[in-house]
Length: 491
Image (cartoon, rainbow, N blue to C red):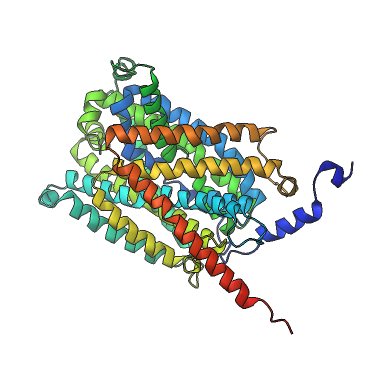
């Protein structure tokens, strides 16, 4: 059978491969272990949701975490394949932009707009992690150090944000390998206490299984439309945490051997998350009981550490847990900065966001992100910010999974080399989870927001997402002017 009979234009496919392999300006300096060290902060994303999930689902929150990590594996098999198909694409933002972009013949291309919007949604999903964990750092420090009780939670969180964001900009401006080194140090300081706090109740006997088995779901729970929408909203928020290890793929242009490094970093992080999310929620619920968790909804790891290790052990562990929060802030910082860089390189954001320093770091994007998050801290509660951010994440995942389906069905894209392949027929699985994200989880998170915190988070979420439209049109005008300027003059 000839290539024409197969429906694949191999010459066109080769041209496409050349386009997607154009250099991004980022430097290939890390291996899969360094990528894992940066992404390993993802298990800490459970912290802002432990009490919130328990308030709606009681012990059933443990099941939701397990199902959400399973969802992550289903989605990330598709993303792992896309990462090796487009080795210079920065994770989800890059995949969608490469698949949906047009041929450059139109000034305003609808496909390019869709790909760019997916990347912007991803940026908004990861970006607020900085503000969320700066608030948590302020809360943990205030609860741990009596001398800080005289300061407001807002002032402590703002001060934490200024110190952490500024320090990470300085460290990571030296290149991604410096961020990986920081990741190694913080991972050692943070995951060890998280593991100790989580496993201690099982050893000391403080864990009581009946605290879980006697309270699987609230007594007024009913499988009606309202509660199903609540569950879909919870899944949207759980995905924001439990599927977020896809961030290991965002450093695709910076891995030395992307075809092998990306899958190794991606799924190594996934297996860590699989155990962490289930065990942490189970340990907290089984030790404190539902009433104990709800009594400390923002920082339930504090009473768990005190119950398991006593006052001195708890003090040491919480300080180390703060280091864990710095680690996840770095993970989000680097991921969202590279999302902005990717959009600028693809011509979906103004060129200034694609500027990098001598070490290949998008410092300007990092500064913009830091300032944006200092403003977000004024929201006060991590849940309100997470609820807005989750809207972006379901959009990013939904569109990225549809991009995978298109990359498998489009003859031109189907001809590209795929060093790592998801199982046969995975485009159907990707389509199923894409529809689960859009529209089901999107409807669920909007409904949940309306019940919990009114319409503020939803409105803020849609406002931030809609801000992309004028910036995209400006960037298309900028691209058009630049292309006309560089065209040779006809004689």
